[in-house]
Length: 393
Image (cartoon, rainbow, N blue to C red):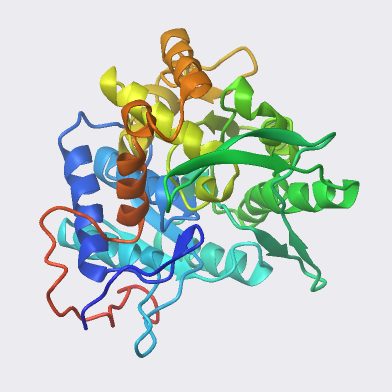
């Protein structure tokens, strides 16, 4: 089957198995080329199949030599429908990890559910005994709880309309967009989905089952961004959820003696989540141009290796005044933000290519789904029926 990208809105409905495999291989090779990071032996990654979660798993396995259990919610191929990129990523990761003598097994299902938590606990107890690190990297737009109620998140402001520039990435035209305020119910629902409740549920379940090692570390991911995105991000509905996530890190540290809980504030990157947020794609396109010109640009794997090696597993974990790990430190440098602000003020359709890296944005977008990766023959027939070795064993 010849697989081509089919883009609808901010997602791609197809994925390329060979491209995803090559993307995973490249991340592994990057980590193999870096100094090792002692300090994690058995790692559970919740949301392990794409983006920061996938890179966290790769970094833990190949920098720390850790055994990893991943939790994902991905679909296999079905007839002419390809598998999701996360499915192909995980199949590739397990293939490489097993070939390199590393333990790697994956559970596929709704991480919010009690059933999947119990499956993970059973697997950890049987194969590893305990985990000493838990990475929480879920980015779901909705959550169904035990009573069957489904909550959906929204990307809105919390007080008044906010109007600013945005970009149509397909036409490469700049226009204005207005983000409207969320209702209190929408804010509450967003916190329910994207806040820290489920993270804490995971830690409680692991602890109660005796599979969370003494002195374990857990980390969840967040984003703050620049002032121009504050109204619809940091101060918006999603920002309320991220504040809840931060508060949860403090609750975990208080309520589970010996467990260290951190929030890692990461750099703005092209992800399936960020692509859906108004204004942010234009900001990221400008940011890419500025940081690449300054030699400061990092992708997911560079960020997650640095997070483990220089931050989370350092002898004294460096944090900001609130106790958060700041992987956005280069993004938020004054010279970077000054350059971004100057470009933002004068950007137009005419100077877009000079001031923003739209091509780089699209490259990252397509590569999330296994396309536009050098060295992959996209004209060749590929087998889309790829299995994840540990699923169904």
